[in-house]
Image (cartoon, rainbow, N blue to C red; front, side, top):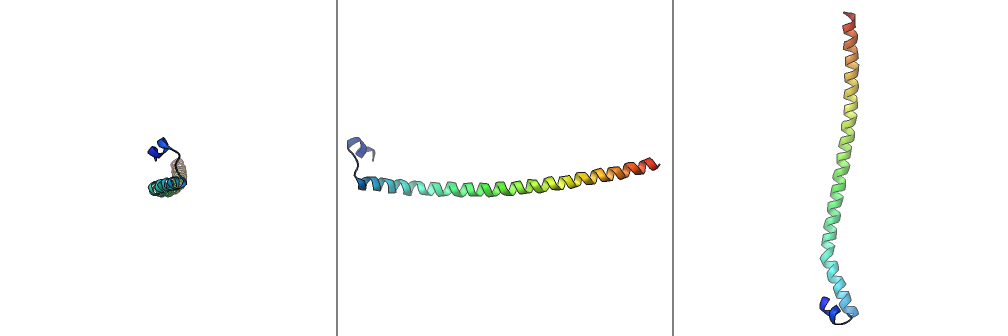
Length: 79
């Protein structure tokens, strides 16, 4: 295509062949990139859910620590 453009205006058929070749060549890269992006988005969503669940579990554990420390503190005051 570079040689054609340097020498003259390309014909419609030459332009169409060039577009088709570019489409064939880059469409595989585009599909691969889209698949990779989809996979990463899925993994990020899973990671966010895991982080949310761990934060909730940590809140429950923290509340249990506070409650048990309160009970133990109260028991110590009885002595």
